[in-house]
Image 1 (cartoon, rainbow over the protein chains, first blue to last red):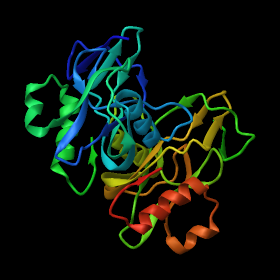
Image 2: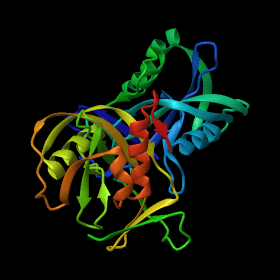
Image 3: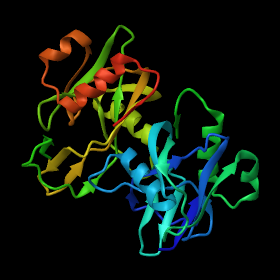
Image 4: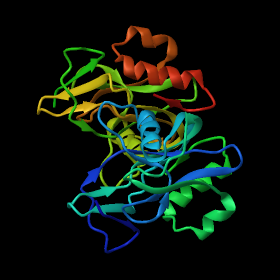
Length: 157
Length: 157
């Protein structure tokens, strides 16, 4: 399903839903974080997706990382809560979501990196200095920056 | 609107929605936290409520505290994320929500304590040792306990 991201854009449609999502920082222990290339818009992003009924939110992060990358992870801590009403995501079925994402730091516990899923075209670990050269939405750059800043308290935004 | 809380209850109806809510710990600086008496089920609870489209989640906490208690607060940090699928809330219009709440610690910046709103019948600051004597749902007791435990990292559950 095609998605269009709007940020502080007067042309953005009016949101009609709030759908909690979880995104995951998956570090490789050598200063890099796992990014996937989204098949819906071609951008690089953190693994993640919407919470399903019946899950804990942290469980959604674990499930999405597995589905999108093949890795098994466990959640370590909260990097931040991202609910900026200026960020609106429109889908081609008429749903218009206001951003609602929690970003968790995780730790790899098993699995092996795959990139043949339907949601991700590619998945690889990326160093901080490589980020500028990739097509990454600003809302995702912000979460990655918060991880690298390594502040003692989670971001609330 | 009447609500019924279920926890690990095989009689609970199947959830059909996830609606993010914010709850607030409002300390008085003397070891007590603000509780309200809910008009929908008579229980004592933390001020809070569901997020509206157009708000930041932390803004929902600030708004609900103002509406329910008259106090102005600012958000300080995240106490925890509470998304336990065993906690199901049924409303009399057929909506059945799975729990999704973020509990924020706040700080009073102004206002004065009122208790004449439609949502709250009573609002007062309560000390830790008074909690056992009040009718408080276990999910709310857990958040208050996490506040008093004062751990360095937020709860993820």
